[in-house]
Picture 1 (cartoon, rainbow, N blue to C red):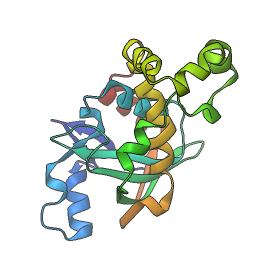
Picture 2 (cartoon, rainbow, N blue to C red):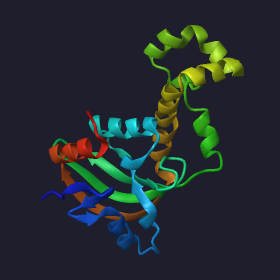
Picture 3 (tube, rainbow, N blue to C red):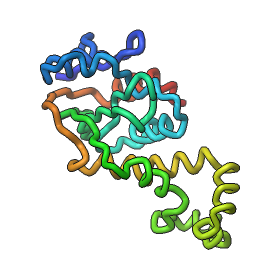
Picture 4 (cartoon, rainbow, N blue to C red):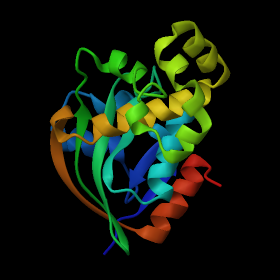
Length: 197
């Protein structure tokens, strides 16, 4: 039997119950989840593209599902759900908040194009001739960033946030859930929620 996931008035519903309320009840908290919004509401386009990629590529991971309503990005409160994709189902097993270490934002800023160890063959073909200048010439990098800010933000999201979120030591697990969604309906819901095309 599958659970139903949907979006209504800016909230994720599971079997017609607000996900925030489900988390509140499990945690027994004092309205911690009340002010969080679905990651669909994020304003950072690179981070929204990352969410898009996780769903479209059917990646099993600690999926960022809720974020702070004032920042609307991954820099503040992030709630993840452990998500497992199978052939017929998407399964959520537990949820928690991302712990931020003291170097969280500093490490994020160093995780884009400057992480040459993450470069693909395509990156080397595209940037190999300017690699030295990117890494060692601050003004050159600043100019590149100015002209390629979206690509850099997207690289940082995969290069840092994705790795950070998926190291369980960085997650404060709060509670277990047992939600099982039909893959086709899950994809359709996210198509609608995130305006995937």
